[in-house]
Each structure stands twice: as C-alpha cells, then as structure tokens.
Image 1 (tube, rainbow over the protein chains, first blue to last red):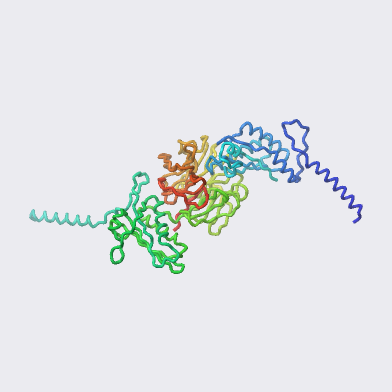
Image 2: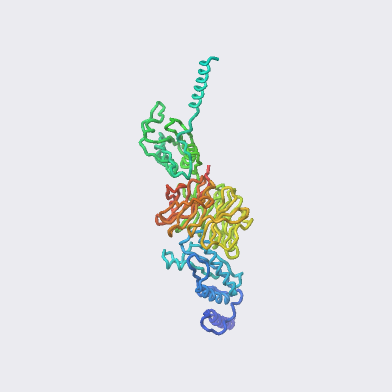
Length: 166
Length: 431
C-alpha cells in the first residue's frame, strides 16, 4: 500500500475522532436551568457504554414514607426530572427496582417493593415514557442501600432505583 | 325354683359379670387424652437410658439415646426423666419395673445395638412401667450412616403408640441462608444433615416443599428478577415455573400437589393466582386494590388464607378456592402477615407486630382465640410440622437470624439451624 493512502486514512480517522469525542462529551441538560433546544435523541443502535453510564448517573432515586407506596411531592418532582432524562434516551429500557426497609416481614416487603416500583413506572408512562421500555423488579428488604439499623438508614432503603439497560 | 336358688343364680351372674369387667383391659394409664387447648396437659414422664452394646463400633449408646430424648422432648408431650437406671431384675435382665416406678416414669425406652462393619442392628423396646408391659418392640437393620433416620423412625412409632399422635421425626426443613449465602438449604428437622440445595449465586426466597417431599419451589433472582423456580431434589435440576414480568413470589403447593397458589403482578398490584404445577395460570383468585401475597392452603384444599393490605395495613384473609368473597380474619394488630394453615386444619400460625416487634401467633381458622407464642427478640414466618404439633420459624433473639422450632403451645423453643437462615418450610414425614 502506498504511504499517501495511509496518511489520508490517518487524517480521516483523526477527524472522526475529534468529531466523535465532541459528541461523547455533550452533557445532559438539567431541566431547572433554561437551556437552548436539546440535540436530537441518540440514533438507533448507537448508545455507547459511556452514554448509558451518563444517563444512569443522572437519574434520581425515588424515596418513600414508611409502609407507603404513594409518591411524595419530592418523589414526584424527581420523577418528572427522570422522565425528561429518559425521554432523551429512548433507546434505553428502564427497570424500576423497588425496595423496602427491614422493618417489615420478608414476603409482604416483596409485595410492597413491587407496588412502589409499579407506582413509579405508571407515573413515568403518564409522563411520556413508552410503556414497552418499562419493567419492575422488587427486592423487598433483601438489598438495603444502608445496612444500619436506624432511621437514617431505613429512609435510604425505602426507594425505587431506576436502572437503565440496553 | 326355690327363693334360695334364685338368689344363688343372681350371685353367679353377678360374679360372672364382675369377672368380665376385671378381665377387660383397662384403658392404658399412659394414653394421654390429647387436647391442644387444655392448659393443664400433663406430659408423660419417660426415661431413655443410654443404649447398650457389646459391639458398638463407632457409635455411642449415649448419643443414640440422646436422639430419642431430643425427639420426644421437642414434641412437647414428654417429660424426659434423667435417672440412674435401677439394677435389672429377673433372669432375662428384664427391667426393674418397681425400681423404675420409684423414679416417677410412666414409660421406659431400652435400646441395644451392635455394629458389624457398616451394618447396624438396633433393637428398641418401650415398656409401660405401671402395667409392667412391653408396648413396642422393634428391630432395625441398616447402614451405620443411617442410624439417625433409624432412630427417628422408631421415635415416630413411640409417639404414635403412646400418645396417638403421628410423629414427624423423619421430616426435613428447607430454608434460605441469611448472611453471605442466600442459597436454599435442606436439613433434618432437628438441624442435622445440612445440605446446600442450590448454587445460583443469587438471592433466593420462600421455599415450599412439594407434598411428596421430592421437590421444592422457591423465588430466585437467578435471572436478575424474582421468578418462581422448581428444584428436583433427586436430580438437583432447577427449572423455571413462572417467569412473568414483575413479581413471581410466595409459591405454595396445593395439598394434592396439582396446583400452585402464588402472587403475580396484575397491572399495578401483586394479586393471587392459581396455577398448574407446570406454571400455567388456571385462574385469578383475588381482586380489589390491595397488594396480595403469602397464600396458604387449607388441608382439604378448599380455601386459601393470605395477606392483603387492602384495608391500609397488611391483614390476613381467607377465601374459598372456588370463588367467593374474602373474609378478614385479623383485626387487633396493625400488621399481620405470613399465615400458615395447620395440617390439622384447626389453626393458622402467622406473624403479628406486637409492641414494635414481630411475634409468632396462632388463631383458629375463623380468626378467634388469638395466642402469642413468642416474646424474645423478633420472630416471624412460621411453618407447621406435618402433624400440626410443632412449628419452625425465624428468630433473631440470638443476634442473628436462625431457624427455630417449637411445640404448638410455644413452651419449648430451640434453635436448630447450624447457619443463619430464614423462611423455613417443613416437609412431610418421610417414612
């Protein structure tokens, strides 16, 4: 192969890298700050691992009151934000993982965790996220975020965590 | 006939009648009138001296007797008398009944055994001390490694013969680990012979035995969501039974093994469904807005008790399997879960929140006669033994979750799991 083709190929490659690196570093827009029109959603099949991680870190966890599965005003606001994030990444599916604190019994906590997760996905669907993208997994009280046995830990454990997957 | 003759006839008849009365065997003094509700039930005093052998091999007569004593003690129906055996009387080395009688025992278990290589021959006799009578005599031959099962089998016979109640000493418990390992484990009801039944590397919950004792169903996160799986304990093969979207939880076999009741997500809430044992939905059992979970079948298969939080907090309901309105059973505490229907049909055991902690309770199948059986630490998730006389449950009174067993009155409560564990299920009695 002639060295000229090699140089041309290298130049194209470098140009491509610069272009793509620029795309990869585009930040997610936070809705409470006025921003210009967002870029179009990711083209099909082109969600990179880095993009998935960015979406994941931007999603807020929803918290619940003791023995309750209804959304608090804070949770509702967080969910609106999450819906915006998810609507900008329509190629990603979402698993709502429902959890409880340790103060209930094991099987009922499975039901309560599931009910919490369902409450979240119902609300996400109402906010425009396609239902086909949404599913629920309850862990009951089996996977606490904080294993301590006090109010602060329990409050952290009564949660629905949104996990994005391809 | 003269008057004197008639009088004589009457005396002869009276004499004959008296003789008949005396020769009819009296009801055995040791047979208990078993009434679970009787707070004054007197336990039968029984002694089990160390088994004797001229060829003990690797077995200890003391350990063999200990297995018997443990079984009978845990049943809650016997008072084990530890007494120095009086000298044997009689040319055949018969028991010294008078000597034993002075120790206060009503029944006596004497065992002899011999080991030849790997073969164990066990001879056990049960005597009624007051009647000086051999009640049960049995010889067992088997492999030395099965010595515990051989003794458990005999203890079932002792129990049945002396009390009329079926023993459950050959049954097993399944449970899930609570600490590092969340796998499903199986052990003898008394905690021996622990085996790990699953190797999923995932969280596993709520095992239930098939009525024939050959398989388990349980919820597993092996596929990163809560699905109902079956495990054949002979082949050790795991197969999915229900892997529907959402929750597939608290699967419970019907008493005839033909159906499984379980909780599946229906639109927004977990609701109860009846499925075939292969996992095909037969029908939806519960309706309404509550979150429904933890079904338990009545022993005749006609009704199911379960948990629903439709009234705002989790409470126990019952509903006919063939359809009909649910009836609420619990009202007192704001939190009642984990119902298990006694195989005798009379009682439901369940978990209730009492003064901020969980306790195991029983109530009649109509919700009356509530009894709190535990009070140390937090106790939950009761599972009845097949004879309806004992229960397994989870307790954290030792600082970590262990499987405990107790008699139906809660008088005797002992830990049995050698590792941490929760969510026990009690198998049928294996013959």
